[in-house]
Image (cartoon, rainbow, N blue to C red; front, top):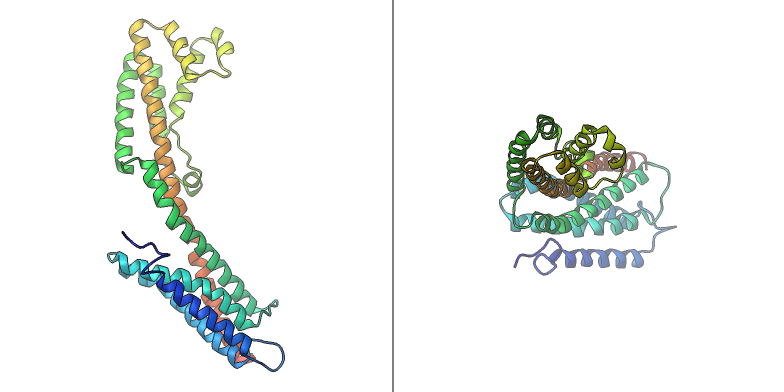
Length: 298
C-alpha cells in the first residue's frame, strides 16, 4: 500500500513541521525584546533567515521534482515536505514580523507568500481528489479508448445517415466536423462538448422538413417524439435506420460527456499551476527586495 503525500513515511514531515512550529512559538514567547516584537530583533532575524531559506527551498522544489519523474517515492517525499513546511512557513513569517504589518515591501512579500501557499493548498486538494474522480469517470477505460469509440460511432452514424437522406447525412457530417472536445481553457474547465450538436441539428432538420408540423413540435420536443415524427414521414426501413441513428448519436453524447469531464478534471489539476508559478516568481522578487531593504535601509 503506497503512502500518500500527507502520510508519507508515518507523517515524517508533519512531525518535522510540528517540532519547528513548537520551537518557534516557544522562542517567541521566551524572547523579551526591547519594545514590541519585530523583525529587527535577534529572534526576528533568526526566524526571518529560517523563513527565507524555507522559501528558497520550496521554490527549488519546482525544479527539483523534474529530476524525480521516475522515482515516485522520492517525489512523494519531496512533495510531502513541500506541503507541511510550506504550511509552517505561515507561522514563521508572522512570528518573524512580530505580527506587525503595514503598507510596504515587507507586507507585499508576506501577501505574495500567503497567495502562493493557499494556491498550493488547492493543488494538494486537486492532487488528492481529482485522480480518483477521473478513474471513476473513465469506468475502467482510458481517454484514448473513449475517443476511439467516439470515432467509431461517428463512422457508423454517417453510414446510417447516408441510407436515410442526404440532408440528414449532411447534418450529421457537419456536426462531426465542427464538434470538438477540449478546446480553450474555459471550454476545458466548464466541461463543454459539442456532442449534442448532432441531435440539435437533426431535430432542426426534421422540424424544417415539414413547416406545417414545425409549430407544434419546435418547443419541448423530446428524442422519442422526434423519432415518432420522423417515422410518420419515412418508410419502415428509414424509420428503423433513424432510430439506430439517434441511438448512436445519444451514445456518443454520453461518451463525449465523460471525455469532457475527464478533460475538465485534468485541466483543474493543472490550471492552478498557472497561478502558483507566477506568484512564486513574484514572491522571489519581493523576498529579494525585502532582504535588501532590511540590510541597506533598516
